[in-house]
Image: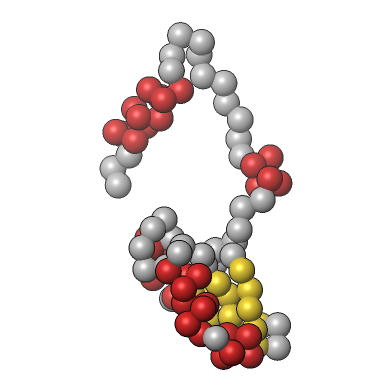
Length: 94
């Protein structure tokens, strides 16, 4: 997620909105404090936009360090990892 200041935003808001339309999420700050988060209206972040707007969650860009914290698992050699994923998705009530 990119960060820009209010002043930077005020110079060319159309350019900032063009970046958001292309799928970029942008934090707007005043004196170093986040005062707004601009999210694309469509795409992967759309499902979280209302939660971010309500302040219930904060989006954080992923880093390679985040990957190290994910649990590792080894599927059995005779089973496809894709088959396991699809089976778990079928069991998920959402």
